[in-house]
Image 1 (cartoon, rainbow, N blue to C red):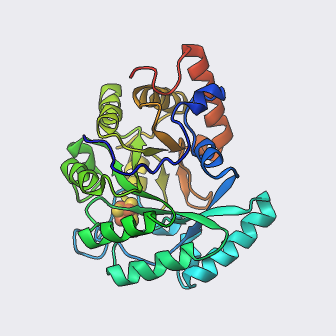
Image 2 (cartoon, helix red, strand yellow; image 1 turned 90 degrees about the vertical axis):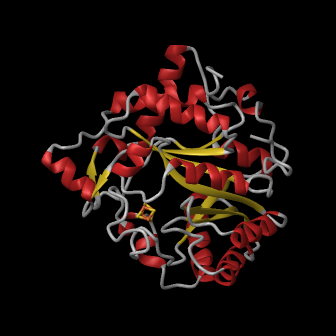
Length: 321
Ligand code: SF4
């Protein structure tokens, strides 16, 4: 894959995190180097739908998805983007003492609208003086050329990352999840997104049924080959009112155990290049929605175990590359 024409990385050298004694290239480290501040994500819900739910591709959604379980999204879509940003910033400032933010369009497929509408919502978000960037989460089959042009234009004015939901490179897993797209669609969208000045991110789920360690490593190696800029890892977890919850209840699917997941994450990160930013290493849901595994509610314990496993192996992100 050709390298980017415009780099979204700014002043942060991909290897700085190693000199700082870290074991992986965390998003927080990237932001501190790039902006000179702690940065916090302020989540916004644009109220956009999903072709996997509105009948375009399907009506049931992905097997693991309950849109209500997305944090914040379940209660804020009726407010304007400016209002959500204002309220979110006020809350995060009071709680964490941070003063700069990245607007995160998280719930739903955040490029699934007309370009005029997208321009309006993205602009509302980046217009806030405390907002220094934009993250757009979406499906790889939901981005028109006009939308990519818009994101490129915005990337000329602020830092932008587009996170594509991939989950796995294996089409049998994508089919099992009812994703409604295949791996080739992701590859093609990455190709179309390349060189436009924004970061290209991928969401991946580890612990999918019927995926071996070798399957997981293949996904990591593919993301490395495609020179994906950032990765967000989630453990397979079940929330209420989803097909996955039924499969777990019937015993058809077993969710990954703590130690198993920690091993998967370390295996995965060893295969990623040192330049790949890690957005997240564990997924969770609000307690009223989470069915299991219960261990993912303790994010600090999972991160500590991942660090301990790296130290035990004497490795870090990129070790196998
Ligand atoms: S594509 Fe995203 S929003 Fe749509 S059903 Fe799947 S997880 Fe939910």
